[in-house]
Length: 438
Ligand SMILES: [Zn+2]
Ligand SMILES: [Zn+2]
Image 1 (cartoon, rainbow, N blue to C red):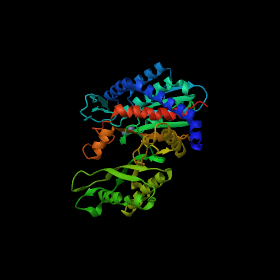
Image 2: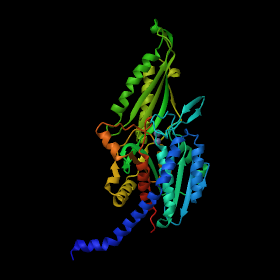
Image 3: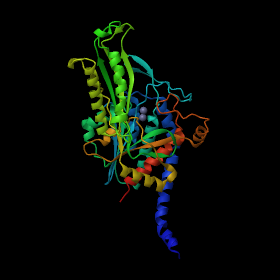
Image 4: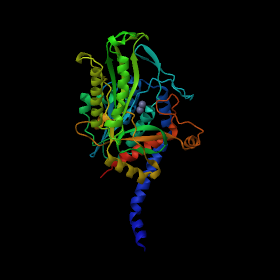
């Protein structure tokens, strides 16, 4: 007998177990087909805005209670956790978000959202334009399958449903809540986000910094108003603001390493009323994106130094320096633990195949999942991207015959019938490996 044949024979039972495990998983996912469809259509047609996800949370909670999960409430807004203790072993936290966006859906789909909600004094249309309905459908279906396959794993599953991801409030509120500190302490934290271009059934990996830290800042550039025809008696905040907007372009290009991406965008300049009046002030609205805490701090410091010194150079005294107002919307970057990434990739490669694994570049978009990784105990965390595009649509897009609309677009329409089972297969495979019976 050849040596390779002998090795194959010795490995046969292992391969057979792996395959029979796969077959069982496939069968279990297959049984959920009708449920997945109904679940997605229901969630998609009834989106709720950030901090207002009352009905969504109630529905998810009820379903999980029926499956035997115990519910922990009071994690801020409508966030809650569902816990399944299934013997000794690791604790895994798997988080979904629940909120929709103030977007009028224009997909033309028969199940398109018609929902309107009151936001402040306005009545706004609401849509799951970021695909958080895909996240919830995959999350709840994964829960159901983990219950069905209870005999295959041992440990504790903490499913976290989070409010207000889009506004950057939810994760911070959850982590700060008293109830959160009483949850079983996770060994590993996972999340998924749908990807508008990846094929359905594919997990996108991006080790280390994957999504950016987000800061929003308003800066009031002050001056000394007066007549537009007598500039020598004024200090013109319009000129000062113009200088400032150009000067801060050098922060990313000259102060940060070319290998350390960051973005500073001035998205709004508001000041003045008429052509012949020099106003007293101009307000700038910025978004700042960065990866490391050090880069973020450097950007914030430079914004202030440049602003203060340009104001002094313009002749303003210390009482009229710019006012820097960092809004309470800051979220940290998402840092994907590379060791955990290597392990999950390996599991997916082995159990599903290399076609289920892709590498995705980091983006400057924000996601507040990073908050969970920033706890004092620093728990290995990973946010996987999840494909949403059916092969046929992908092929058309590659030929320029179809457009793949981005996340947050009013036309974003994931191929849910393939995307959700794909996401469930990926997440369940990862969970069954992490929680494998020893
Ligand atoms: Zn979003
Ligand atoms: Zn999102």
